[in-house]
Length: 187
Image (tube, rainbow, N blue to C red):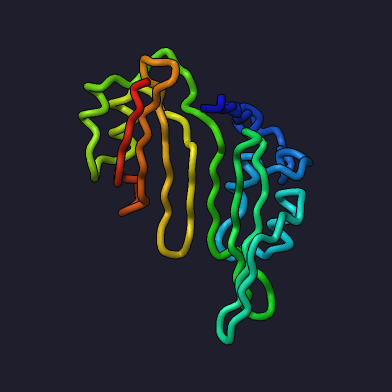
């Protein structure tokens, strides 16, 4: 298993009111703030400007009623991370239709580890706030997906074993993320 790198986000600048550039870095790799800055309906040219790269076109479909293309970028968090964005042609221009990212990172190793007992208290329908309270930490967001139909995330927590992790999938429902699935490797 490869080591995952954790990226620390510098939110202190925002807290004290210092202006931050629209693009957090100028590399052709995507960081968390750049990913968050693009939403459904964002034009392709704007996504490319935010991501500092055109991205690699990995697929294209031109049908009678639907025209779509998919582009991919690497992430700043890991050499194994990737961003995939699907664009749809609407009114003569390409716009973001769905996006997903695998940050390629492991759960951040914190002093508070998720135990088997805590893991057993997590079940379908619990909110992300409830799971974070059980775990004692916010966890590390490792995967995200957004489309017109759904929003999902995967959050991981460390376990007492240096190789273990607890992974929980959440789906956006009624204004919050709720558990849809969980798994763990206790190492």
